[in-house]
Amino acid sequence: MRKMIEGSRAVAEAVGLCRPGVISAYPITPQTHIVEDLSQLVADGKIDAEYVRVESEHSAASVCLGAVAAGSRSYSATTSQGLMLMAEVLYNIAGMRLPLVITGVNRALSAPLSIWNDQQDTMALRDSGWLQLYAENSQEVLDMHIQAYKIAEDDRVLLPVMVCMDGFILTHTYESVDVPTQEEVDAFLPPYDPLYKLDPNDPYTLGAFAGPEMYQEMRFEIQRDALASKEVVKEVARDFQSAFGRWMGDVIDTYMIEDAETIYVGLGTIVGTMKDWIDTRRERGDKIGLVKLRCFRPFPLEELREALSGAKRVVVLEKAVSVGAYGIVAAEIRAALYGQERTPPVHCGITGLGGRDITFATLDEMHERAEAGETEFFAGLRKELLEAS
Amino acid sequence: MTADASKNRRKPPLGIVTRPGSSLRNKTGPWGIMRPVFDWEKCTGCNTCESICPEGCIRHLEKKQYEADYEYCKGCGMCAAACPFDAITMEEEHR
Image (tube, rainbow over all chains, first blue to last red; front, side, top):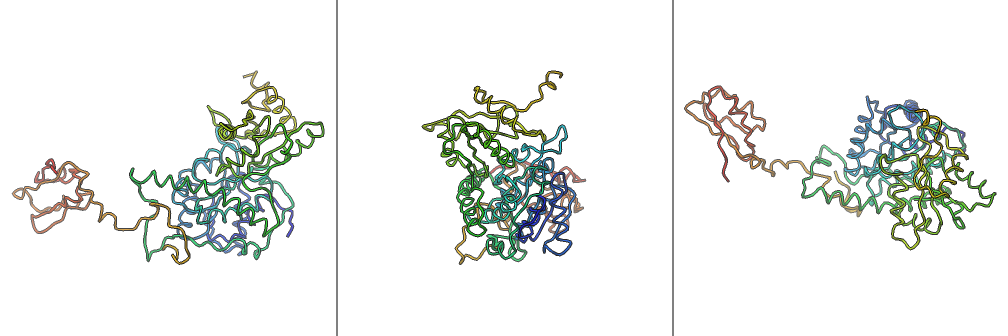
């Protein structure tokens, strides 16, 4: 059914349709509306879940860890400082191979305190063993949550999934969304059938201890299964298309790359703005295309090689920076293209930090600076502030 | 409980699931280099050593008779330090 709803509401409704047994979260801007909506849906009896209120994000993640270990599909959501506080538990969830799904709302990290959007928070957890999907719009973020449980719980994967959505830009925006029926979601997503679960009648310990004789092999298996999960992400996207008729890409999606000389790469909501900007630049004769990085973990190495290696130039727009090194996605794309027959130069424009609007003027600036040969730069800087400091 | 094997599921990932009782199999005594030795002339049977042992491996057999379970004793020496009658000395272990 088509509804005009907030992005956060789309997430809450999607999570409810996935029939979680346990939801635990701590409210934090701009994730708040998601968990407010979910707690209301539980209180109203519309979702048959246990909503566990906790005193911190560390506890929320711990509750979910235990709940999934006990065989219950579970959910949490957080952002920024909350995600950092969760981090210790998130590594444990991945290490215990528990298929939890959380929404990682994207917000800047302190200090200075900022409640506004960028992607430094989820990017910081890229090595945690969690799979990461980045949503472009409300429909995609709804669909992604349903897909996320199917990916995570697949025997070939058994890894948690973080659905990343831009704070405010997506969480607080109203869009027309097609909300599937319970019957449709039930047919697509079977009940969680855990490979192993905590049971007092058959006790065991999860993730207890591994000495030097074993730890490395356990990490090897995580890496092997995370890399192999790429095929599951693709398969689930295809199955979703068959069931619901919607396709927004699998690990990547492309826009006008066939004849493109310059291909842009972006993640999350900025992809929509970039498509509009590309339309206007194309009217002026610029051959520009776009690759939307929908799935950042597992990293779609082969797909990016195929999509990008024909370009004369690649420009990556990043709302995060690995401080002291480079833009994170750009560095990985350079590594993906290294040693290929054709290796276009990869430019990295870091922008949109702490909620700085990314406008057509920002994108024009990035384009000009990349054309001029700059490889690493911040776009949209207020130079008058820097000159006065 | 693990899933029904008849459903042709994968094996659990390596090392994630461990069964209880592993401390019965994994003897921790060899971690130490010292072990407590009792002097029964000085021992009064006050039970201080038994109650303070962090491994719970000192057992009261009968009045003035204690036994340290060297398969689990790590040689921390708390019993010797706590004994009010200096009836316990820590001696180097040779294996």
